[in-house]
Image (cartoon, rainbow, N blue to C red; front, side, top):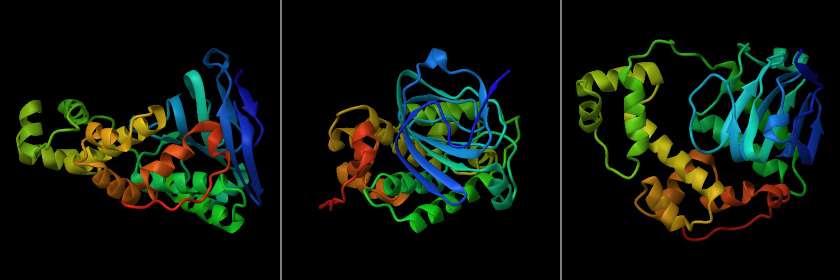
Length: 280
């Protein structure tokens, strides 16, 4: 039988924890070896933002690079875990009765949330939770904003056209290229008008939106997992230069790349110092 975790308990060691009425926010190190993580469920509803390390999840939704944001409703059995050497994650937990009162359309499934708005909000919570003197009202407001993304999530049909996966892969494999609809359509063997319409129908976004999202995710993964300088990361992820990366990154996720790198630096993120970045 799968273990049931009490509210606020996770496979991890907390470095910071904030208990608010009807809400707990924790920053944790994923210290449990992968083979010791068993199937389990939680009494509470919670979001997990995995910022460092390779996080393995079976939640419904699109897999991608960069920060992994997952929502687990109360009672869902799963075995989400860090592969290899562990990682760091933020947990935002709501008691089951509080979650039921908050969610507009409560989901019964574990969800992977990859929309920039949801990731931006979760990163803002991480930033606020790892300062020395967090504003509790600000933390609570951000956490409540995040609930809307899980409450309104809808699952698309399970039968998209077979070529769609090829189109997704082609976009991901060509982040550094100035792709066009015609080029993607040619690569997957469909008409460009059909590609544009079907892509939006099944994915809820355009191929151009997806390319920008993949570039951001690639940059985020490099920031968290490598020591490359920002200029190199920008070029590898398909941006024109460091300035372009900084503008797009800040607009999408509410912070510059340098701050994101500091927040995802593991133990060093426990207390983030305010810093004014100049230039970009």
